Length: 303
Image 1 (cartoon, helix red, strand yellow):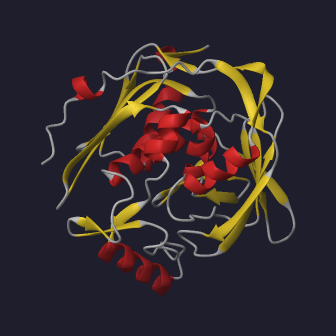
Image 2 (tube, rainbow, N blue to C red):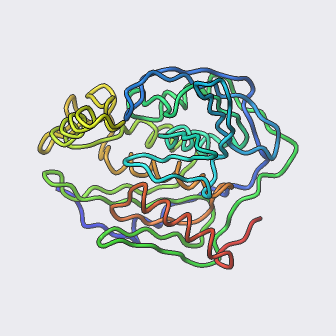
């Protein structure tokens, strides 16, 4: 039996301030795998970068030319069921799980080189990226990490979907979804390296089994890159009131929505500090919030 969603109760947990030095990787790492939408094999090499560099994707085109695409909101490109950025025609898609892992593990500056237009999906979670980051380690840089701290609340909504961010120390997220056969599913907590690794990173991308298979067939029939790599190995597929193979963590779907949100907030260009409350959010609404945040400069300060 699911409890009634109580924002006041769920939003009362402890938070951890983000203030710290900038950091990069201690060494480069490389990961390869099939992508969720194109189904193609891709290799990503994630390298250390100097302070102030930010997160930048270097896309290698078939011609051999490379184009750098900063992971910033102004380069965001609307794509179904993923976060994508584009610059000079070069698309880099499904970046949200790597972005969330870098954010949560406090990595500010990297150059991610990719030989395709979409990052690997692996098992649909952020664990493979987190494992790679932890293996090479983190190096602090002698420059402060500036953060976006909220002065007042900003909200965006679309029908029953709503997301807001207001003042608060650290990053605290309250998430809520309601799914047929599952009912209301909630999660709330501070996003710290430990909490992300333990409670959020294991949660996989999810979808209804029949819809996912229909989407895959549609992509194949139309020649579009849409869910060509979806399977029980790359996502948590829902069948009625259960997940094929079982849930990896309790309330896995809402935890994955939080994972995506953490990654999408990184397109603001700085870590964001505040209290987020998200009802039925997804990539489009997350990006609408970031866009509203960037337009309403008086609502926050860079500290």
